[in-house]
Length: 417
Image 1 (cartoon, helix red, strand yellow):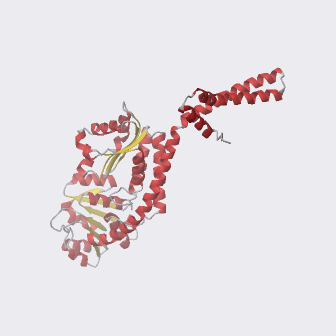
Image 2: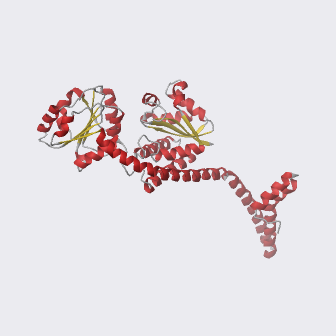
Image 3: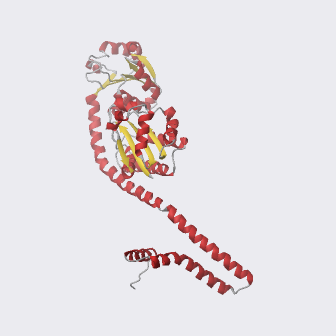
């Protein structure tokens, strides 16, 4: 039984393709049962995020899992085939270690993916599809991720626009859990920012977008609410942090709008983050005393310095992962010998019981204990040495030399002496 990792992610597939193979968390348990039903897949777990959908399987036929993925989402396989990657055994273990450690993320070293992998393992465990093999692999995966984060600087610096936006907001507001955050737009950048800010548990989180469907999806994921973009002028005054990233060709937040909002707020400070190109917020807004306006350039300086530090840590992280992959593969190889070891011990135990039972009968009959013990030891020795001796006597030609060498190695013999 082999471990396989297969799927698509932000490196291999555009957003519209990723969306078509994403899994609804509420139906994940049912999907896992469906994957194992009538297929040569013994164990399985599914990781599904906005950036990746991956299947982790214990199987001898990964093609069956690929067929199921297309079938489950009612897609022709040719639709997803160009974007799929398949990682057998060693590559699968390495891939899982790298994903959990944040080395395969859109933002190098981001921590959210580890929690998402833990959730994937919990779903599989609850569904009963996480067996001994995948269960052990997930345990090792989480341990490796912890080691990477605790012994390298892979997560120590800010390397994303979203994280930089949170960082700059924290410079102004000591506690983000007391602030109200408004996101304008509903693209990938806004979704990433919403994830980062949601981690700080703000008092209020809202999404304003021209089309409400996408905004509702993000709001539902992060416990927010949806506002109509045309109502922005009425709502701006209620928010302490505003993050905007739309495709508008003209600014949607002008100087007059912000001045009116500040007056209504009695000049309580506002952090505004403009991630759009061209700008969503007029440059003149930044000159207002109570507004802290940050643009892509401001955030880019923070990200650039953080990326340099994390790239240096990447080398150390990859080295740790390489060693831990070898450790896990060694455990897998040792696991394959368990049935043989168990059978060998069972054979020895049967021989021991037989000789002990015979010795007890002789003692009960009144035979000399010393002679009984001597007979027991000889009988047990003969039974244990008979199979290798017989194998050596029955071997012929070149095989006899190979058997003799193997016996000498097992019993640590030195015939030449």
